[in-house]
Amino acid sequence: MTATAFAFAPGDIVRVKDDWPERRGPAHIRTPYYVRGVQGQIVRHLGDFPNPEDLAFGRPAEPRPLYHVRFKKGVIWAEDRADDALLVEIFGHWLEKP
Amino acid sequence: MEQETPAKESQRSHHDLGGASKFMCEAVDTEPHALTDFDKEVDALRQILGAKEVMSVDELRRCIEAIPEEEYHRLSYYRRWIRSITDNLLRKGVITEAELRSALDAQ
Amino acid sequence: MNILDTPSDRLLAAVRDLLAQKGIATTAEIQERIAITDRASPGQGARMVAKAWVDPAYRARLLDDGAKAAEELGIPMRGMPPLGVLENTPDTHNLVVCTLCSCYPRGVLGYPPFWYKSAAFRARAVRDPRGMLAEEWKTVIPDDIRLTVVDSTADYRWMVLPMRPDGTDGWSEEQLAAIVREGDMIGVTVPTIG
Image (cartoon, rainbow over all chains, first blue to last red; front, side):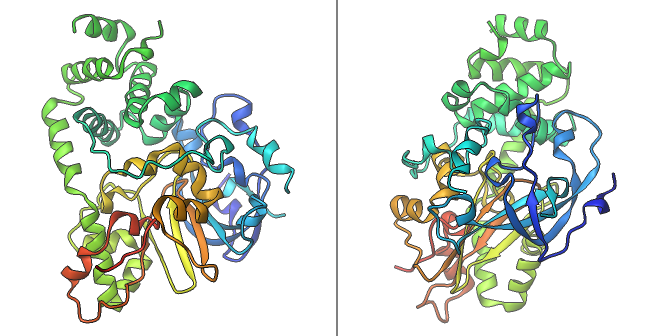
């Protein structure tokens, strides 16, 4: 799959995949558990970087788009103030349209 | 949403610490701690292995994450690193376990 | 016994000897690398902050590309990850954490401090940042300021550009740099005078 298959634009509403590869076997992922399945908004495309999920195992790693995604904190932890935010770097292959 | 968090948290790997309930009441030690010679040597070794493409930072992280949970939290930061570096060097065959044993025996 | 359970100091000594024998990492290379790493310190980030406070064009370049802006001041960034800079404003305060490991803007701040690598900071910074900042650093983020917690999860490193404190009109860059601390550039504290 090419990098452009995951293209998102600033302002797009996205959802992080509710996927748990670490429960299925050896895995190295850079998507924190707390954003899985959560909806956020693309801030910007930070660039394309080799997929760390392959780099971690010494496999050939394709460049993947990396996005800065903003989440409302109250959506993740209910006790939080709704207008505080979390800004997280997430690879395009972890994002889907809600 | 409120019910989702605990279920989700129970799925996290032990290094995936954001919001982990067991640490929410733990104090942050904000005092400065000077690095030891051990710490600096491990750090330097990691940089050299990265620059020479012997081991990537992702490979370092993966083998840190593979340290069993209790050991992960017991070991200091750079003690996790030397364990992961050694693990990587063995897995890649850069050094063999026999070589490592004989180097340890010679100490 | 699993050989990886060997005490860390012995493991380091053995691995160091083997890598030296194999010509992969010599003692001289390790010492040289330590010397280079020791040169990076929060003073470098502080110079960038001070320049951004007095020079709006530099501030714009800093926010656009932190690594380039660091290099402009002679701070070596070759081989370092890209550096993003997040600006504190009268409406927004930024706090940087790495919940998965301990990614830190080492090129401009040096080695990460002990607290940054701790499980307590990594857990609490994303879930109860206001409570943690008030309790541990006496940093109270006013209710009318939005807090953005930046979880440094991937290929970028992040640094905070704090707000210039009142009462510093007419100060030189050197004077300004002297009041900027490590924690101000991660967002656990804010610069103060006196």
